[in-house]
Length: 237
Length: 237
Image (tube, rainbow over all chains, first blue to last red; front, top):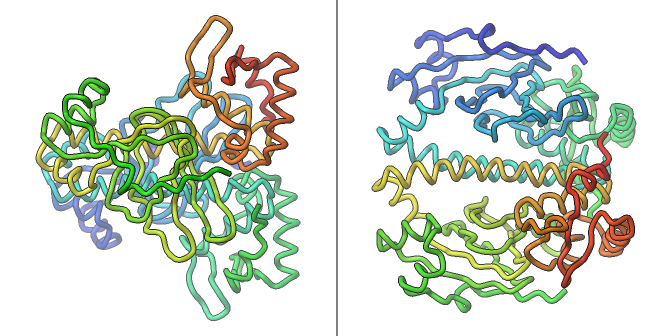
């Protein structure tokens, strides 16, 4: 796999206040940071770029795109823990030890903001409305992991893949005439990584979904014609 | 299954301040509620007692025992979303609609405290140290779901069951001479529910683990002799 191990220190392009306001004027986090002169950094990630969580002192906010969170057991295997998208945050996981560490890997073009956790905590004590916003965000965050549990609770790879496509359509899809189109291209390899299957199985299942016209591909992007018909391919116990 | 659909209104036994202090004098939540005269309720659950989440206005704090959180798709199937234990909280999930609702089901004898979410939010604005405690708790809560993801990310039922036994030993086990003994009895049916397998498979796998002396049973409680040896039964991709 083409893994670009990203050094956060190197790839920072700090936005000026005016340009960040232009791009993300409706992002509540950045609006708050800008209004209160809190410093943060913007990272731009290409597909398969990786951020290693080497300490728990930062919080990362996804401004655009999607990432997977992976627990890497050194020199043995990886487990995908979650799939995050715009508005989600990560960081502050249990401190990695000699046996494992965490990675966040971009699925498509992804933009994230990074801020020190201590600054967030200070803002919580100084600005009660931000505190309420942050608490509500954290409540949603713990719920968000359950969406991923629903995908991988299936033992069958077909059910996992179909559940994943439905979640991606909901979180990162745009309604068009023929159905819902995913906002980014995603490789079979990445789909396999997310659901814990092989690339070969993903290719086989997608071909079958294409043949039965449940999905189609337009400019390398997946279109789901009817989420209801597709969801009937999930085998429920 | 012997399901006692619990009506929260009926089974409340509100502890007096003095008795709750006696029982849970070191529980940080109850200490705080008592010191600040915040009213809460205590629920006592027997194995398989169920709390339905019919609204999102309450937060439940586990004082003793363990629960599973389940998403119930009406008249079709259930998915186990998480396994919670002492110190964990639940409530405030997305509001159930006509297609699904949530349940929390006690595994063993379980004691939980229940408080209105609005009171927690009010306490956050009035008491900064409590706010910090609550924010840190929520950060841990979103991490906690990842422990469960690690169990069910396995497609093999043996790997899921072994991972579950290791997590239970870590969260609800007591070190004894011969290994780690689980603090409660758990039925094969419940183990199967948690990992999304059949009762028959669980019984077969446990018999095999007993035969190979990786586990043993003492007064209906499972003893894990060596977590390291047991963990070698997990098939990693």
